[in-house]
Image (cartoon, rainbow, N blue to C red; front, side, top):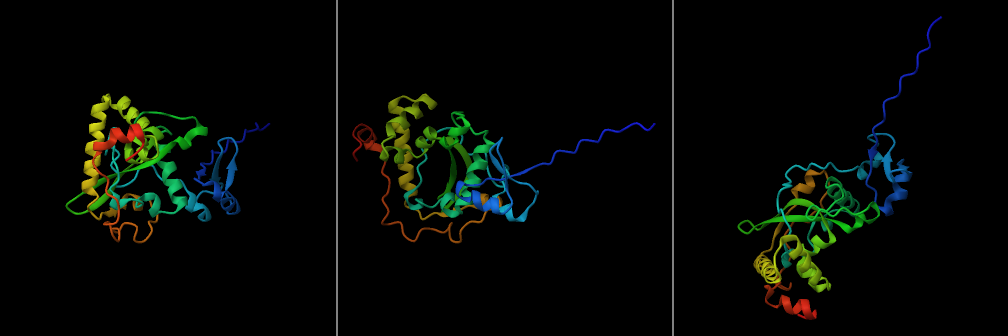
Length: 251
C-alpha cells in the first residue's frame, strides 16, 4: 500500500507594503490594494502591481545621503532666503508621506537624537527633518541627510520658530538637558546659530535635492532654483534679545 505524502507547505508570499496617506485610502482600494487588519497596513496583493507603484515604500538606503552628517542636537535655522523652499514643498503630498515614513521607519520609529520612541498611536510626534549643507562659494544648499526627530528636538533645530510659537523656553531647556550646557551657554549657542543664519540669508541659494531624486521621487520643476528676490524678506538677527523674547514673548 502506497504511503500518503503530506502536502508541502507553500512558501510565504512576500507582501509589497505600501505607504498610503489617509486621503488616498479609497484610491488604492479601487486600484487593488488590500488592508491587513492585524498590522494595520495597506499592501499590494500582487507584487509589482503597476497601479500601486506610486505608493510603494521607499528603500531606506539612499544614494548620496550622508547619514552621519549633522550629528547631535543644535540650533540650525534655515536662511530667510530659503524659507518655504524645502523637500516638502518640492514634492507631492503623497511622496512626502512616503519620504517621511521611510525616514522614521528606518530609525525604528524613534528620535535619532534623544532616543524617544513613542507608542504606535503617537508616531505623529516624530518628524522627518532635512539637514542641509551650505556652500557659500557656490551658493548651493545641498540636502545632506534626512533624520527622524521628536517634536522637542525639532524645536531646538528651528529655535527661532519655537520662540515665535511660544515654545522657546521649552526648546532652550531641552537643549540644556541634551547637551549639558547651562542657560548662558545655551543662549550663546543660539546667538552664534542666528548670526550664521543672518550671514547665510544674504545669499540666494540654489537648492540641491539630488538625494530625493535618487529615491526615484519626482521633484517639481524649478523647485531648486534661487528665489526671485530676497531683499523684501526679513533677515534673522543675532540673539542679543533672546532672553527678552523668552521672558516676554516680545521682540
